[in-house]
Length: 256
Length: 285
Ligand SMILES: Nc1ncnc2c1ncn2[C@@H]1O[C@H](COP(=O)(O)OP(=O)(O)OP(=O)(O)O)[C@@H](O)[C@H]1O
Ligand SMILES: [Mg+2]
Image (cartoon, rainbow over all chains, first blue to last red; front, side):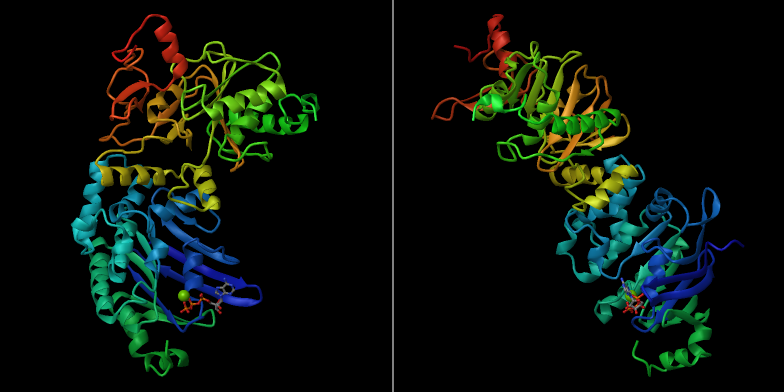
């Protein structure tokens, strides 16, 4: 089987300082990859390099495109990469306000990606937006309200709806449950798990929270100082960690 | 200082050449916003400094110049711009759309169809149609470059969600020759169809924002809309009270202090010509 995403020797330096170094992995269709590691270990750097938000210094990010099969997204043209960014890829930011248009109604936020790929029927766009609000458990009656009037958990769910509405095949998430109350986190995780399963999504999820990876991730990468120190099936890594750092992390001696 | 101390049409030849280059580039890429080094003009921003610079760059001594402000030739703004070029360029002026070779306008397109050889110069306050939803200039430039115009429809979507119909009545966004999305300046959307296939050259100048864009003659200009909310070039549903025209854009004016109102053509030259030809509205004296 062709991997959906194949990352090879991806590296990013900030001046003389390592962001991430020589990261390689394959992600197969329908798989969820978790990335954990302490603060500053390079998780966001890696994610942003993969998603095209940062330009890596070296390495490849090969995506199995619908039209032309595996393509290195690092070297493809910017229009092509941006097109991927609003069709087959989605990016969920930790802070919903970074991923939403706060001055636009909930319906407009969800509809934007549809309009970006050519939807021109107001009634259809609105029906799809309504449907998606319901799928992320937001009352359809709030469709014309701005996200500024939403709670943190609702904003995050709205961001997820806005991203998934075009049926992407790969979702990048940077701490999607970070900064939310524990009970709100649990509900969001539940929702994410349901969506991932129902849509057969592939995802790369960065998190501090081992509970998140246990629930969502099929496989796990552990990062330290920009390097991947261990990767494998999630249960394997968590139940039988090989690397000393992972052992510390799992035994919660390390506060991640 | 005497008036002869000014160069023809106020701007020095070097500056005019720079502006003409921007205009030519704009004509070559219809709807594309060309940056130019806007000069200080002896009038404040918001008074049409962009339009004035474009007019200065295209005027020749043989031209006949008309200025309209919301359709009228006699507002303070129109009068002062007209007299500015009378003094600095010595060009002939007119209020008749047909006779003018260069027409500078704020907020309207004349009712009478324009002809080949005429130039219509628009004063533009905000040239960037995407500004409303995306304030970052670096991002809007990229959106234009890559034809990423979904955001423009988000604005129209918001309109319908809030008002039940597309409530944008002025500066209604258009797509030029299937490529660039353009802000037509704050003309009423009633005027939008006149931009398309127009025989005249249409030039747009934004002074504060330092942008020039253009439509060469017979350019296709399409107003954005949704399939189930099609664009409508609407106007007040009345005939003109003075000349009886039922196909011209109307202003509502208060006629007495008892709340009496009437609708009259906003294009004063058009209205005057009709009245001279014997057309009469119900409020005509
Ligand atoms: N823009 C930048 N300029 C310079 N150094 C940076 C920049 N962004 C990140 N770094 C550094 O790169 C390293 C990796 O940062 P990164 O943000 O990827 O870590 P992270 O694992 O996402 O951390 P956190 O869990 O706190 O979000 C850190 O040492 C960080 O200080
Ligand atoms: Mg981070």
